[in-house]
Image (cartoon, rainbow, N blue to C red; front, side, top):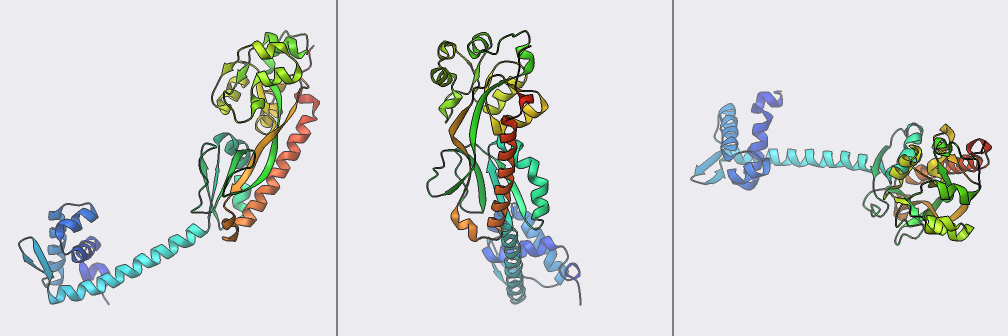
Length: 320
């Protein structure tokens, strides 16, 4: 039995023939395949020469099959249909084994990426696609998606589960405190520059709110340096440019490595936090529920580590 190349010559010729036969127009076939019309004509002439029989009867711009061309087209059409169906079946199977993880870049880098190796090891037959997105990007409801979003838990049409609530406290680079002799908040905030994210969803990110709550006048009148991205704000804070409101789950590693320190005992518990957000229909797909459960466990471990961090005296600054 001949192989395909021996029977038809180049595979591109049979692709051109099938497209031309389906359209009954060489120009339309060329447009579909993104080649020129002469290229289609040349491929079909080569195929006819290889087979030794004409496949089309050409009359100006119109074509129709010869008897041999009709026979070959019926076989080609059925074969191509089977190939397309098989490819779609394979793609659907891969699609069913893919889960998208969607979140802001800062949380991907602090929570998702550190556990990715373990996650892939736990689910070796699954593909985990990571997508960095803004917090207000809609959750994909066409494919299984676990979004990690910041807010109050209200995402209409979606199910949300609290990962961990935010706990806030002031932080800065330790060198910024060089020469400071007092841990009095009024003195610290009065002398050191402030960094702030404007228009943040949680009002506790505003220094004015801290001033009103803790009765620190300097925080109600002093203008902070505004930076509209929290990850960039933390980079500025770690480089010694000012004091920032630290969210414990996002500054934990910086506290552990010593690039940030807590500067006072002032702490607030937020009504906002990070949530797993997903379409509840996804729970019926593949091992979506198992992956979600695995991530819940990792979130609980992170919450416990953060709680331990809050009780660690080594991450607090003490005046000398």
